[in-house]
Structures are given as structure tokens and as C-alpha cells.
Length: 120
Length: 107
Image (cartoon, rainbow over all chains, first blue to last red; front, top):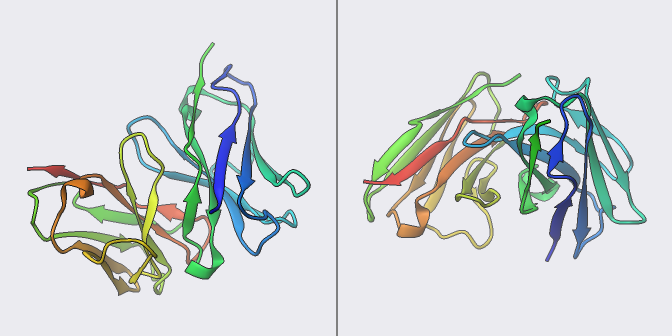
């Protein structure tokens, strides 16, 4: 069973950079799946941030593209999210997820989510 | 970007009720749509993919239909564990987008 686990700081200063890692276990990150980040501000809906393939190809949300970088480390079986110039509007629960190509791109495995608060 | 509009945003229902949630896309997306269920404090879980295919392990009381721009999620007989928020997501084009969510609450 594939398991994903986010890790990273729970508090980021305004104008700082968020760095999160998603560790994948029970399966290889080098499989034919994409790996995604989704966020959810407190009390609000889901927002797609972007996705990465193990070869390094990425797709980002246009609204975040100028501030986002995703990377993958196949040797550690994990992928990462960097989000620069953080503001209070970036306060959210951040989820990583596996995008399963065999079910037309739906995300079938998710991490538990990690709350990131932007505050001084 | 493709906009997904769910209706209603809030649905009050009783155990045993038949419930239908609609997701409308701003342009045609064929059947590149999934439905998720999210409970408070938990990650979303996929219920339906390809608009109408039930994900493995999901109870058969859940069903999906539609293509193009209009889609529905139906719960044939609402169970206590089904009170949650439901989201649609499209995979026809980038950026992937979600509907705003439909909260199903106890009447």
C-alpha cells in the first residue's frame, strides 16, 4: 500500500520560503505516476498547486507559477515543494498526493496534510 | 482555466435520502472528472474517476454520471458516514481545477 508523508516547518515568516518534502513508501516514485501538491486554506476549498514526474517534468498552477519550484529525488523516493515570497494568503494545509494515470489522473493516495502558517 | 461550479454548496439531508450533487464545467472536459469525499481534518479520498467509474473499495451507493460540461454525483441512500464535503476535479487540461465543494450536513 502506497503511503505519503509530508514534512516541513509549520510556521513560515512573511516573505520567506516554504520547503516541504513528501516521502513516498510502499511504491516507487519512479513509477508511471505523477506526484502532486494541493493546498487548502482553513475553512476553504482545495487548490491545485502543481505536479511533477520522476524525470523532472512539471506542471504548475499559473497563479503560483512565478513562486513555485517542485523537485524529485528518486534516490530518496521523495519529492519536494518550494514556495517563495510567502504571505498570509498562503496559510493552508498542504497535501501531497499520487496522481494515478490508470484512473485518468485522479489522486488516489494522499498524505495526511501539514498545516503551514505564515506569520511573524 | 476551466472553472468547475458545484451546486448546491450546502445540502441538508437525512439518513436514507437520495442525494445528488452537480458539477458544471465552463467548457467541455469529456469524462475527465473525478469526485472526492473529504471529512473534517482528513485528506480527500477519491470516490469516482472518469466521471462514472467507482474507485475500488468505494460503496456502490455512490455513482457518477455525465460528460462534456455537466456531471452528477449521486448517493442512493445516505449513510451516517457520508456526511462530509464533496469536490469534483477536472483532468482535461492544465491547470487541474477543483469545484468549490458541496457540504452534506445532517438535516
